[in-house]
Image 1 (spheres, rainbow, N blue to C red):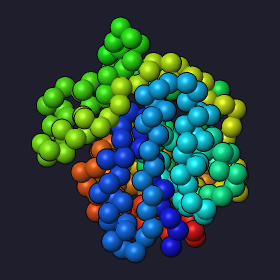
Image 2 (image 1 turned 180 degrees about the vertical axis):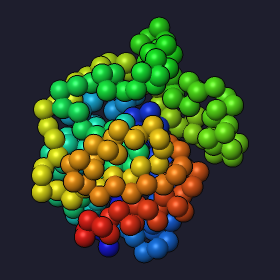
Image 3 (image 1 turned 90 degrees about the horizontal axis):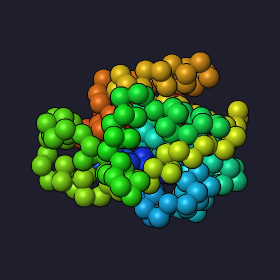
Length: 229
């Protein structure tokens, strides 16, 4: 069984994957929780620096499992890992968007939510704080878990969201699958199908890796098994 290398969004923390990681480990999998929040906090080059920080944490022949905005980092991580990855699984994630920034690819409602929340220092407050409290409470009913999510999520420099992704895409020979959790990622899932990737669907929401770890872990295992990794 490969190593599951679980990568959080630029807006979140490894917390999003802790429950899934525990489930995968309990079923005999090897798990690595990746963390690049220091890059986010310190600014600088997002795609080059974050990709190298992540690649330095990857064991050989791991499968990168990327959630949400982390999907856009996948080509840079693959390049920085110099061919050592066995595959990539996108989970309710953005697909690579060479030459475009996050702000150019984000849905309009999400982009408005982010840009309207920017503080005077050109940093976006932690993403969970941007959501209306009733919405966040519905997505994450557990009070302690919700508090930890807010506490661990970084504020993001707007410059990182304006940075254009390098002219990289995933190698055609790489094993890739897509797991869709929410309706918001219909277009990404459809684009994955058009690339010929296996697409698995759970009828959940974007934060299900945090709140429904058992179901998501099973689907991630199924996705990796479908790649033959």
